[in-house]
Figure 1 (cartoon, rainbow, N blue to C red):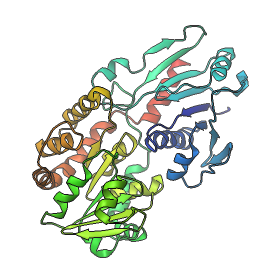
Figure 2: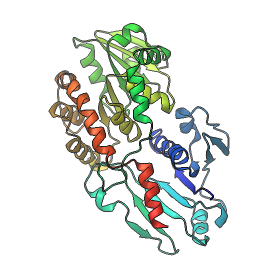
Figure 3: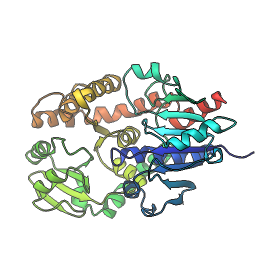
Figure 4: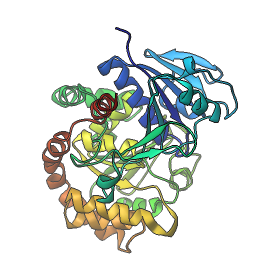
Length: 378
């Protein structure tokens, strides 16, 4: 019996989050569910940053058994034979009109999904799996929402992820060896280790000052290109990989931008992880460590509502909530005091992570829930 085929369309807006999610999903659908996946991406340069095997000049290539197509524009002619059994548009991107017309010409219409962004807000449950009929063509699109309850599609999580993380944590040489491969010295690794992944408008300089003037040593590991202005100001030099500077209790080191699988190891190796957007946010929740989420800013501060919805659901405690709200500009506060509160609460926050993981894993993983939903429509 031939395997199902799936076309996943990804338009890169948030640099790495969009392609990060789509690349994880594509590989999991192929590896764990035997689906023939074709990933359409408009920005191969961003894709290359998280997956160095990507040839940025290739119109077509195969990576990890996933067919990758450079989505160069909306023009193009398609036949029904070009259309996959399942068609996913990520985050409401507009797939080519010619492709949609070909979808309508297929004798058996494809399952058409709009894979939406992750939110902890309650309204997501009411919109998950809702149908939307095309105004002109005999096609129906379904909205598929990731989420934190059993009334949503769940979160992306590969079947072997927890075992891989547990094996890494159980090996006392694993984290030091990994950090050393990135240039982190033994002295830097002995301090409290923080990974920093945020948007440019995060209050990084203020946080650096609080760490610098604090009593406990902190090593902040920043991927190349992240918070570049604030990092360069602290370093006193361009924020290029290998650049490092210490002042007071703080050491900041710029890391090369690592592939996806190594980013997980970075999260596992640190005591506290600052993450942004959706992809790294979800990975931080699987890492079992304390984390702070920098949410993508929206007009009229709609992102603050989304942030508060997650904080309420996550129940990380008063210090966690206060730091998260100030980090995202939803509240004002003293950064030395905020850091003092968060650092004191970190052991409790980390201890809660296993319970949180079990709670959200009980909802099933997104790839499995997605395939089950598609099967229910055919």
